Amino acid sequence: MEYTRITVETRDHVLLMGLNRPEKQNAFDLEMYEELAYAYGELDSNPDLRCGVLFAHGKHFTSGLELDKWGAVFSGGKWTIPDGCIHPLGIDEEKRCRKPVVMAIRGRCYTIGFELLLAQDIRVIASDARIALLEVKRGIYPVGGGTVRLFQEIGWGNAMRYLLTGDEMTGDEALRLGLAQEVTEPGKEVERAIQIATDISKRGPLGVMAALKSARFAKANGDKAAFERLIPDLIPLMSSEDVKEGLMSFMERREANFKGK
Image 1 (tube, rainbow, N blue to C red):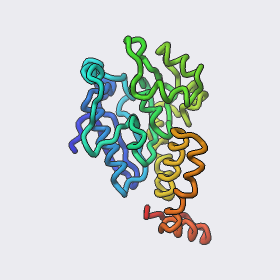
Image 2: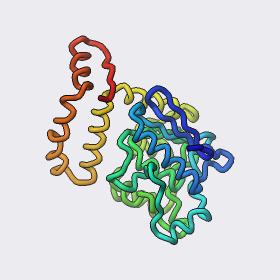
Image 3: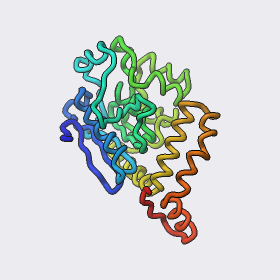
Image 4: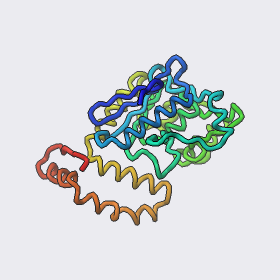
């Protein structure tokens, strides 16, 4: 895959995915979304990759969608992406990227940017961030998960406050509401996100994926169904090399060296 709208870089077991249209404030056209979907497919399928970082080049994460480019998609209904791709928005719960992604945000983070935030696992936000679901100001509404996920994250009233007005949310407000896990100085958010992703990549990758899968299943299917799957999903892990290494590292008081096997 030749990337022109994003950058893709591997650092050890971490895949860095950077939106790269700073001259357009990283506005999303169809090509950018498709390239990002290819990168998520690579993160999911490559056994050497254990965690992703989603960020943007320039001072703004994204100004949102280029609506003139997306009009035909919205009017036509369903839009498919090529084989091997995975929706960064996590639209299909059964086909989400199995590995965690840490998202770093600064400056404007509008429409699809906000919905990408809701679809990622950990978020680091710069203090200059301005996050908004602007769709109602354009006569439409969020269709990338904002209406489904925002109230689950911050409660009904808080969600409606931003969903129905299109008002901007600051980084500090995102932290207060639980949408951000950390707030940094502008320009420091990517470095911190990489640190978190690197820490995750040092843990047992099979265990990390199983934990993420279990938590997502609970969110989608409820507590009872998730509790019923805990032990059955743990049993296959118990015979893995990683579990043996985890036990040995505990006994030998050293950091584990997991292989993902």
